[in-house]
Length: 270
Ligand code: ADP
Image 1 (cartoon, rainbow, N blue to C red):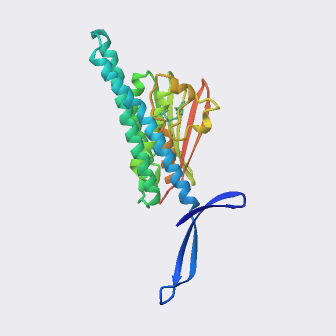
Image 2 (tube, rainbow, N blue to C red; image 1 turned 30 degrees about the vertical axis):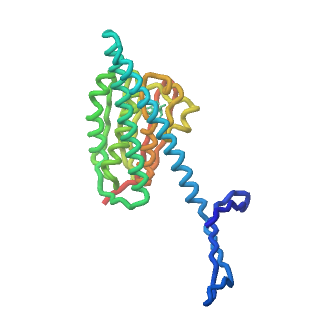
Image 3 (cartoon, protein in one colour; image 1 turned 135 degrees about the vertical axis):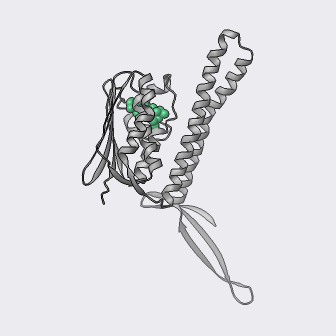
């Protein structure tokens, strides 16, 4: 086959052109048959995959390089420097582990999109309760109040493992980006939607970051320079999970005041 770029309505299309000879009984070529197949969509997928692989490699390089560097430093470090270097090594290896876990989750989600996964009845309130319990020690350690207002047994149709992951990512972020004050977790339901709301009194999200926070590997401009380590994949994973469940997510935020994330899932009642 031969790849040709064709211009149609001003857009560039990738057409796979295959030309096969048609022979008569004596093997003489009497004609040619050409087939055209539009593979623009497939090419675009390939391109996105290439970008993702390049991003992944780039992101993995930082912690792996740092680990190598600090191991070497540690070898010849004076006693009083050792614990500092070990601390960096711990942080960087934890970041590496989180990157690998997040990337695995993203690729499982991508596969889940092409296959139909079986949704079951999931008690959203119960999942939230469990996520809150899991994050209580972190909130306490940060001196934050973690307030919970849950409706009784909100049922949705979904994958419990993924929904739990989405809730944890949102609560984890709220705690991480709130130096002081309160993280409030609520849920409610009407005939159309089940909603989970996570509100914090944290640093807020600058307007320039807001359109990008759900992109893969995107981290707030100032966050990148800060001591807070992250993969930039947490919200990208949340977005994928929400889409898989035909839901939506919205965010409102004000710098210095705080952020509210609302996750909507289609209501499901028997
Ligand atoms: P990470 O937290 O690893 O950087 P995320 O995808 O979870 O990656 O978040 C992307 C960015 O969105 C963060 O880097 C931060 O700038 C911003 N962000 C997310 N949640 C909050 C929040 N609750 N408060 C303030 N900023 C937030």
